[in-house]
Length: 263
Image 1 (tube, rainbow, N blue to C red):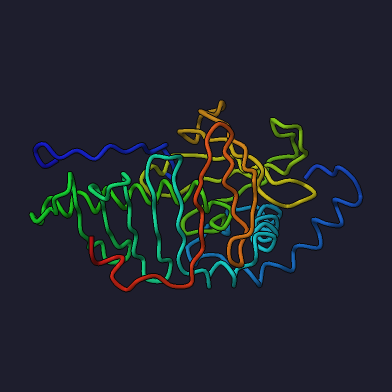
Image 2 (image 1 turned 135 degrees about the horizontal axis):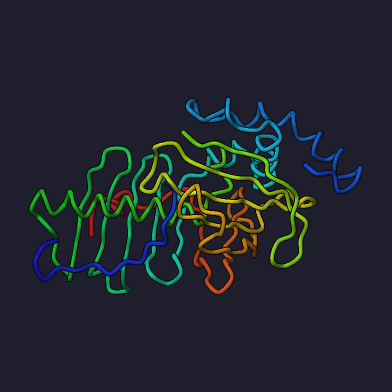
């Protein structure tokens, strides 16, 4: 870290990230199998070790959230991560802008594809290549964390993930839900993580997740609801995480051409 230059940030560790209830629910589950073709998995998704039923439910979640095409076509997303920082992400170009305060005195601009960017700390632009590299890498880690807290339902069939069907259970609020287990294979900042992803049996939306710091853990480190779904552009997003909220969510079609190049 550059002397006297400190960025304060909060990262929650992430990403390494049917029992029949009734004949109606069984029919509903069977009817979503055809969605597979509409939501192709990443080329290195662990299809062999994943459960077909879990994949079907993941596809149904994608469809309920707006569909794969709507997600792919979504261009720019803004959000405030629990009041700690504000992010703007251009999904198509890979540009990410992270603002740590309201004065714009601490900013990281990075690109998750090229790994290039710019950094401003305490109102001064960092010019040393090693410092820029260090902080743009930090920015990518922050983006991995913060984006997963908002977009996880769209990423159930991502690269090097394995998806298992565990059971039907109730959430902390008492909703009957399919429980999917999501694990990772040598990808992300914390690949040993494990999630149990709860999907409402009726709404087919993620309504809770449980986070385990390692695959072997039997007790989650925390459990959070996923609620307050709203329409943003052509997709649904959830901002409610219990005691915390992801706020100021916006989906944009365009933004200033200098937004990711100038402070």
